[in-house]
Length: 279
Image (cartoon, one colour):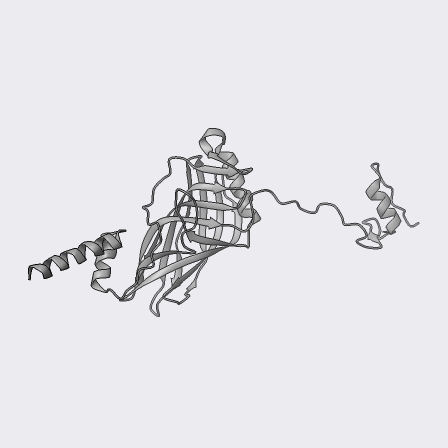
């Protein structure tokens, strides 16, 4: 009997050591050993960073040492504007090395009466605009939310990115809804405090907190990375007319036309070109 008690005690200690991350996960494992836990590799609490690290020209440094709030705001505007209508990947990451540990973020939820895990692995940027003032970006984001192998219909998230100062950069939304059950809509709210911006490769890192309310409820927090397809450097629009784009160019003066030779002359001359007029 004494040996049996010692064996049970050792088994419990081993279970606590294996689970390691939290007592909640340990009790979940003991209550249902067949249930596997696929949580994020780093499950940190939401917190404001002491300093924001910005990487540019392949060099990284604390923003408060050599950057202003306006510089960070303009860089974020370029970054999101370059990636407008693009899909950014979302991954759970390590806050020290800023490397992905999973190809998604996940959080425990309850759908009706059924325990489940919600996953977000990407977000599509569908609109970028400058907000009132000089410290806010208005964004429309479409999160790819799944749970237990199902993809619910979700509305776009009207979000703002606010640069209060070089150490306070927040992305938040007013809440968006997902049809996760046959009865009612589930509201989801996201808060993202940014502490890492890589302008060379389009990475944004920070602590997140995501909450569900409604027929499906739950949530979680941790550290994640947004991986944008393009970098933050401004685009180069085509402002010059391509050569040999057409044989004739219509004039605004009484419908007259200019031949190709005249068009080439216009492009090469520095002075004022007088168009031929019909009498």
